Image 1 (cartoon, rainbow, N blue to C red):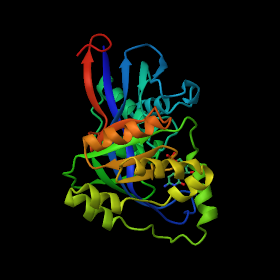
Image 2: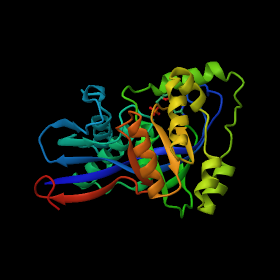
Image 3: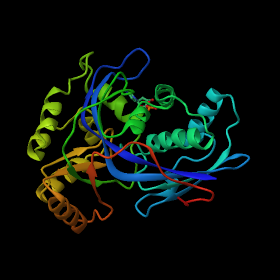
Image 4: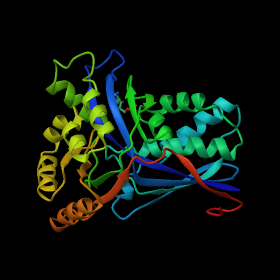
Length: 307
Ligand code: C5P
């Protein structure tokens, strides 16, 4: 018996960051969107817990964290402990989401692992319990379960879906080398010692989202981690300028970076921007629409991949 779960990359349309809390985390007011770049995770019945990872061409396999610390295995162990059963199964993960790219690739895999284990182990865990376990594993993981477009507060783990009737076109330009999320937050602390306790609200972004107009959304995009990310990696600023000169409405660092995402007017606009970036040497660019669903089962069968 095996089950395959698909989980999407996320971008932050608005990422308002406040001054660090006593526990070291930063209060956030963010709007997440799940976009159509996916990792697929297959869990097959087995006596022990194992993981094998297959990566897309644009991903450096050495960058994928291995060993017992892998977030997929931690998710499986956490759910097993909660359910009072052994953590067993053979995970196969096919990665398309850039690693350490600010697109919640690890979080997507963890969310997919929670869904796959819950189903394969026949647990029927209530949604609110899965969301709480997800929050324990990482700030972005509850959103990876929920998907669509949603507001996140707290440290990003308290998620409420928001209305989004748009079909937005994005181009994502990953970097060959990842950027550490804690390092970017630490740099934010250095650059913004006067950051407010309450993070900047997402009101303007939410209003723009409701119009369904790409140009309005482009103007409202906001990321407080962009400045520290560009200060650590100045070439990201050049990449944003390049994509905007190739027709994107607006380029922005995704989350803590280093992936840069470009909002485009249409499918055609996204294709033109992707081609323009590829012509300048950024040939690993990905084109995607959003919003898309959160972690969900795509096939289930007696052997891997059989629906
Ligand atoms: O929660 P998660 O494990 O994804 O967070 C990774 C790191 O990012 C944290 O250890 C922390 O350094 C930083 N972080 C933060 N404030 C947040 C979310 C993450 O400082 N709201």
